[in-house]
Image 1 (cartoon, rainbow, N blue to C red):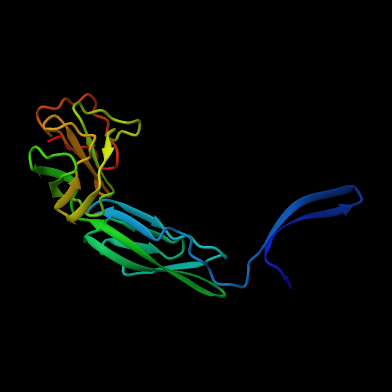
Image 2: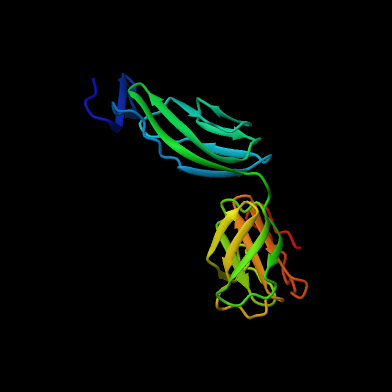
Length: 226
């Protein structure tokens, strides 16, 4: 009976009157402990868009569970893969489980499903001062990760996102963001651009007087030029 967990490499040999043959055998001795879930504790998706998340765990988990999934998502209990197309938006606390012969391990997954693709429809005031608060109105702002401002012509970094100045911001609702206009901006705002990046995509607001010099897309949802 094994007394210690681990991977063991064993050389096995067999001999007869014609000679000797050998082979390498790797033996994995699992610890007598329950699984420990190692997959991310947060995930995001969008309503009506394909979603994929895999539960991973240590100590030889043989089955998986997930309770509290939004409608449209399901779990393969043998592989730990959660997949499907979310039909309900919102924030969900999903209890994940992984089981082996010695017990179970659990972890809470915070799953954010955005209802709307990210889109800016308007902003105010029309000519904000630096360090002042600017309100962006639109949809799909839940879980926003960045608000980026840029002076004059719009240019893009290597990853396809606007190359500019990150602003401090507060998500008021899925339809409203308040952002502090960076000091490096040249006022008035006409001729500048602003981008919001969220789990449901990225959207770029370019006033009519700005010139778009590239149209690379990124961040899953692409850019909506308004």
